Amino acid sequence: MEKTRNPWAWVPTLYFAEGIPYFIVNVISVTMFKRLGMSNADLAMLTSMLYLPWVIKPLWSPFVDIIRTKRWWILAMQIIMSVSFAVLAVCLPGKVGAPVSAFTLTLIIFYVAAFASATHDIAADGFYMISLDSHRQSVFVGIRSTFYRIASVFGQGVIVVLAGVLETRLGNIPRAWSLTLVGVALLYALITLWHFWALPAESQARTSGPEAGTSEAGRILKGFAGSFVTFFRKPQVWVAILFMLMYRLPEAFSVKMLTPFLLDPVQDGGLGLTTAQSGLVYGTVGVIALTIGGILGGLASARWGLKKMLWPMALSLALPCSVYLYMAVAQPASLATIYACVALDQFGYGFGFTAYMLYMMYFSEGEYKTSHYAICTAFMALSMMIPGLFAGYLQEALGYTGFFIMVMVCCLATVAVTFIVKVDPEYGKK
Image 1 (tube, helix red, strand yellow):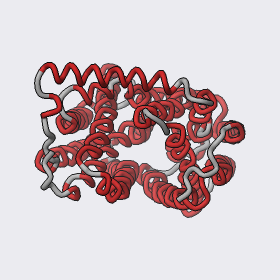
Image 2: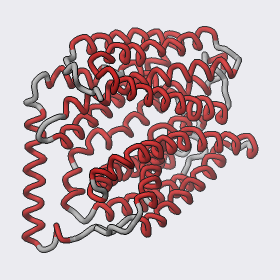
Image 3: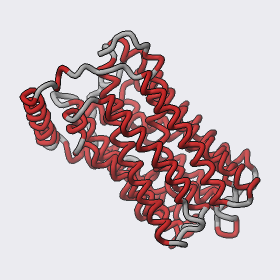
Image 4: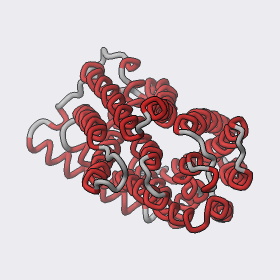
């Protein structure tokens, strides 16, 4: 491994590049399809299926270790994603459903970007661990998290606001989104070019020669099989899986409907915001509140431990969902009120989500810690994908008020799994 490359040259940009495609695939796609005229039922189902690569990525993660180097995987996936965003810009249908072939192609390209993004996640995290010693990993863990959050603000906020401004100026929604995607593709291509220089080179010694490669492949695949077997033999494994699937149920149902709720006209039960306003509300103010909640959640868990904070965090995650029920009933016209409601919900979610992440780390402890955590993240993605498939149909059947009443009922699932899960009282304390 090349030791002279300063981590400041690549850690920030690597994790910014990791975040951008995730938010484009899973968040911006919802706003874009909504603005192109897709129904809530269809956009929720189709964009929820885009979580699939993150659900199943543990199945091919060993091959990222066996084939080539992690640097090679990072650069290859970034090239694929740059091209995907450019092709999306060209192939974006003028209106959803017409022509069908253009819309189908758009979805296929989103899936290509999704699989490339999930693979990039595997390679980037592995590259970080083998490129830095334990001390530097600790030093830069906050830096990588910060730049991933910046990518979140950029992806959910800046890009959406830019598209909204172009919609207003051009008076042409498809063209506005096409130009936005061209800009994203150019930015991502520049980051990719930077990484060709900035990423330190990996040593090829560990995979040189056919015998070494065979031995490495056998070792990794054996460990891969062992990790799955030992995961499902852990004590309370089914309680843990139930917790990972149900703890975020209110959020899992509501998340795909929040952007449509902000954008739909008042007569249809929405808040009637413009694309740019929704980007500012949810993608900027909301993300900042989410980040602050996460930081305070980390400090609280370090002070009092996961067990003591589990109930406060569970209630913090579940109860603020009521702000959407309030807005569905009252339909406030004041942007300040909408900002405050979204900020409260996202702050609570950020604070409450800390318990979820800590529990996954707690349950992953043991011989196969890294592999078990990867399996946990697959269940995390699955917990968002399955409810999202049905969220749009439920919203269309119940209306926004009825839908958010159902979301509040789902808070009982959060309470139930919090009640049955068991945690070491000392875990998480500083």
